[in-house]
Every structure is written in structure tokens, then in C-alpha cells.
Length: 71
Image (cartoon, rainbow, N blue to C red):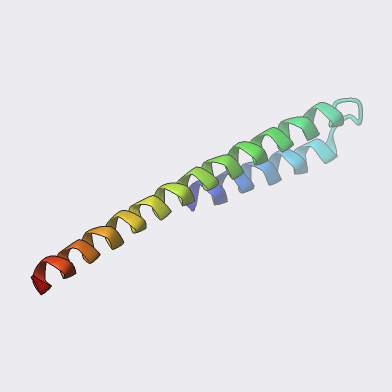
């Protein structure tokens, strides 16, 4: 989550600086901002998937423990 905030902050800074500069380079900067944002979104998605798999694993272990205690 901290990484997403960091990436968003960096993207906002890049966008802010690009607004102050030459308009010729704005397209290249916009592409760079989009790339950074996409990378951040991909990292967040992979983190969420990892957390989801971890929760599923914990739930599976808890279910197995409950079944063992019933026996």
C-alpha cells in the first residue's frame, strides 16, 4: 500500500513538473506518467493477489485443524 502511495506521489510530481515545461515534451512526459501509474497498479494487483492467496491458505489450515479436532 505504501508503494502505491509512493508511486502516485511520484507520478503527481512528474505531472506537475511537466505542466511547467515545454509543451513539445509533454507527450513524452505523459507517456512516462502513464507507464509509472501502470507499473504501480500492476504491483498493487500482485500484492493483493498474494494477500488473497495467503488468506486462502490460512483459511484452509484453520479448516483442517477444525476437522482434526472433531476426530
